[in-house]
Length: 541
Image (cartoon, rainbow, N blue to C red; front, side):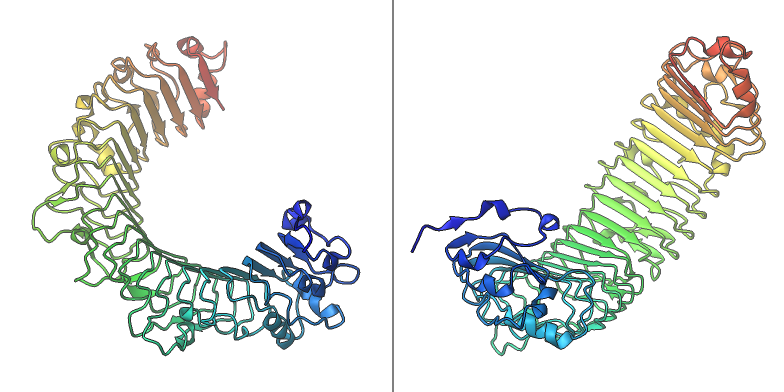
């Protein structure tokens, strides 16, 4: 045999490959050919690929829709004898619009690879079914399969028979209505289907309605399960996933399912409707994002998730509170972030408070019935550094013992009852507070801030949307000797700055949407210009 050839100059991106060099079939000792483009008229025939017996590694075949235009080439040995190929990608042109799905299936039948293949990708295949070789148990080395945009297929191959398969991605099957028993295979042996599978992903399955779960043990090694944009999927999920570490369900609004038993679960993102079983315990779960999935729950049982670090609950219409079975406060030793957003019936946190020594950030957005924050925040939440409250109109006070002394950032937006009680906040005792943002529609407030309302450590201060604010209280600013940045937004009636001026420490002043104040602060001619001329950076719209 002559010297083997490595055709490096063909290692180009797929988008740049239009056609192959002439007479490719004569390069019989070629061992590396990353991309082969099937010609339509004057390009390379698929039969030329059959002559290249020594190809190894990865091969991508493009424009397979052109195969039927090449005088019915013989295809029986195109790929089947290439035992050194490890990764194969078969791609038709997007939207090529075949008028004979049976012919396309026959083409894929003839493109059967050697059984030593370990990775296969098929894209834009427009047959209505797959040939028998796909999913055949003789492919004992197959570890990865991707089927993408096979939009006319009505069923899936028996991938459960591939006992070495570790990764399976199925995307863009527009006509698939169900995933049934055929998916698991007809293997009569005692070996369970999908015994090695670690990653399973379904994406953009627009008509998929039901996933029929295999009755016996299945997916015993599955670590990641992703289901994304399957809007008609209404039932089921596997109920036992002992190795699962990440479960991600996105844009599956009709899915009604119980959490699987998954003791190794670390990360959960769920956008569906949850039926939470009372006996499932998740000792390893660290991250949970729930979107619209708590409609059947009025109280969320945090005691099932003792190791949570990150919690985000969004748009759970009937959720009223967080709960714990202990009867007093709940000890979440790992929790660092808690966000509850758009839960219109959420009234309160745990009655005994949440003991979370590492919790650094709480965000509460659009919880219209929330009346109180967690009790005992000073002692139970000693690491809390950021508290953000947005559109909680019924919240009227902070806890009796105040806010944690390590608080650095405080945001209060459209919490009118709370703002009305601002003299009781006790912020002047928070000597770590650096950033304070306040937005309000409080109509009776004409001057702000009151004297000694804020601590002298404050460095960034933002005021917005006060409808009747007419003046800034100079006494409220005189103690802010560390203030560096002041932003004033949308205060239509604000007429002037304090007579005493602003703190000399100020280096940034921004004023937006305040037409009367804008005139007063106009450079060199405004009445308040001399009060701010010393500030290095001024931005006024």
